[in-house]
Length: 201
Picture (cartoon, rainbow, N blue to C red):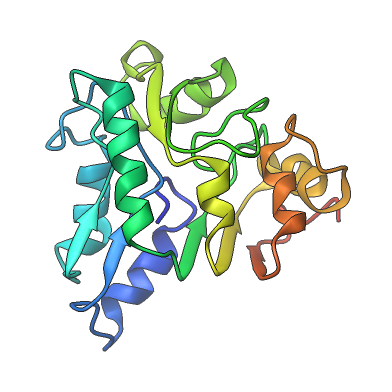
């Protein structure tokens, strides 16, 4: 499952629905390094507020951004993914084409890893914090190979700031310079875009 502004409308629809998720497992894409789960800008807190408090799942899995050994935490998360096949992956996309926190240049065969966030990602996410200096500079992210292992992917994107990334994802070459372009190789991807995000298609 994804965080950020793109999937919020989906989660609202899920909360308002009559669907029961109590026998389902959720696996999140990523988490900031250094933010405790109770921090209001952690993705643990985001998912609780947007979905989990209102619609409990059987179990929720998110990377441990507070782990003393981050590399071990990444490996542990790969072990979780190995035990839970992903039927449906919800994605957003960054203005630089990242999916999860897989920044440009991330190998397509990557597993869960610790990421140094790019300046553009930090700037984009600063709107959620009191100041840019408060935005974490690292995260733990599910790798591209794990994302691609999902049976179905739905990607949400809204606004003109996403238009260039959407164009490169759909029409450009498949390249690690645009991580989302790898989705061209997935057999079942649905894009949900507004007119502004789709303007260059």
